[in-house]
Length: 189
Image (cartoon, rainbow, N blue to C red; front, side, top):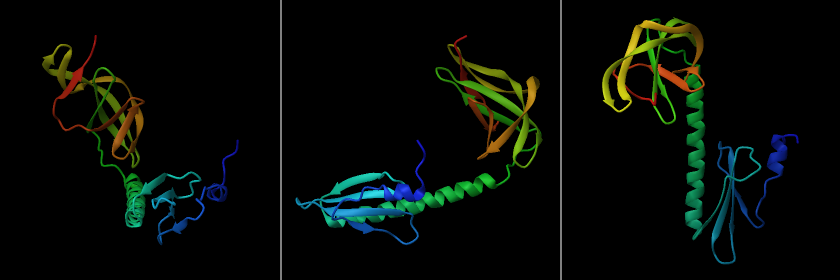
């Protein structure tokens, strides 16, 4: 089945009969407001080029419906601004430098800690090598706090992309600059 084009998605929208279209200048969204025979007001909300509505809500009065439509448009503006801000932040070069220690945690029924050292940098990537850890204190049964041990290298260096300030070292773990504090870890074996 082929994907619908923007025009086909918009044309496929359900528009309630007897409804009034509401839009706001500069906002990529539309609402359809209607009143039922019972006096209840209903609003169907669409964002962007979506063919399916993102909300269909009834309200006790027209004033409440109008207020909610305005809140919906305000939210659309805020979300759009957030996405633009995040896109710009992703374009910014990272601040990692050679010798920085990165730390990340992952796990399902246990918490694994990993430490990595930055060996070289480019504007969008870092070359990192996993390093060992030292137990600082046993905190309970099969759990402890650990810190990085830069004198022990584990495996070969690998290239990793920096995205949103984080370095994805493998499928389960994203790392950030380590704050130097001991980190909690638990295990089963």
